[in-house]
Length: 118
Length: 401
Image (tube, each protein chain N blue to C red):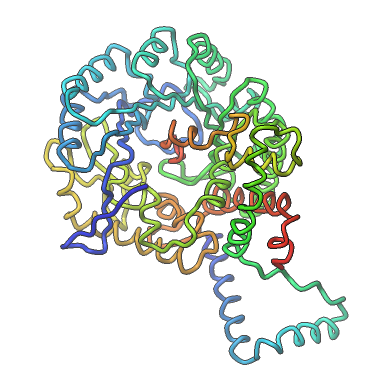
């Protein structure tokens, strides 16, 4: 029931947003929101982040090659590198520097665990 | 990764090149009675007979759907509730096929209680991968994982774990997260860390099969579930890798190494649950199902039965011509298409789990479920934030807003 109600509300909001976009040019939208804020007496809220999940993933992937080159030496001398890079190297297992987070081994060892209901 | 073959007669039904998992039910019986279990017929002591198992292997090997290696998961009841001597007979059947590929890799997820020295010797001799189900410390585990007398089982599970350790048998753990766990992330993580259990998968309680109510179904709990994950993530990082959590590992892997762009066809290659025969499930009677293994044993008004045939009566590949099979396969594909159109996480997820769509939304041709939100999206959100934070020195990320 909850799912139905939620999806109905989501759908209604989506339709309203689509209608609004149809009748108001995109550049007018922030001005309208600002005006609504003034009328309602609210302080203008900071602009919401519009970055989507795919955009964020793409940005991370663009950034990683630079970090990756640093992490090559992380694998040899982890203590000399910034914590952030060490952690990322741990996670992503580029250097497999401490052999604690061997994703490939984990997934190959039991790829069936990824079907989670067992 | 699966490959796909387009069929001439049903070009819109993707069929896996290879079976990724063969799920075999040695018995529906379970020696305990967890209140969140989704499996039906858990009091039946029926067993998979060697003749049935022989036919399963014969048909599977003859299907052309097997590569060099095949993962066999003994599941859908407590696998170790079957006597060791019976397993010896079943494994003896495998030896009849020993001169031919593939190599079988066996896996068992057990509640840990039946484990003995004899079982450990058998497990080691056959290189069986072991997972133990334990929900954390006793005060959480014993609320749900009880025997038929209503007694907690934690102490008996720990004895099984000690036995595995004595025999130097590596294992992972699967822990179910209920509403009781949500305020105890530190205790749950601390338990696994103190027990030196290095690999843990968390199954957020779901609405599935015979489990028709769920302590987490209330949408207002989702913030608490998110906070539970957040705390686990912090603890995992602080532990310096003492405990690896499957959901975060999977999220990191897919964010960093996932394909740059996927569509419905590609996503069908990702998940063994989506393409026909990626997973083949066989019950102790030889009944055959595919897609999500949780479907076997379920009756549906909408789809009829999820059993597509019997190993004694049908060739595996012929099952795809059955109308109910075609309908389910098409609906699953349509559900993935909808995910592609509507869900931001699609490229990282691939289209969800068919069983959750069916059990929560009533149809495979649907999109988001509670499982999506709590087990896929939340870990991805947390890992994304973590990576962004650690990479924030980069101009590329610093200016993305």
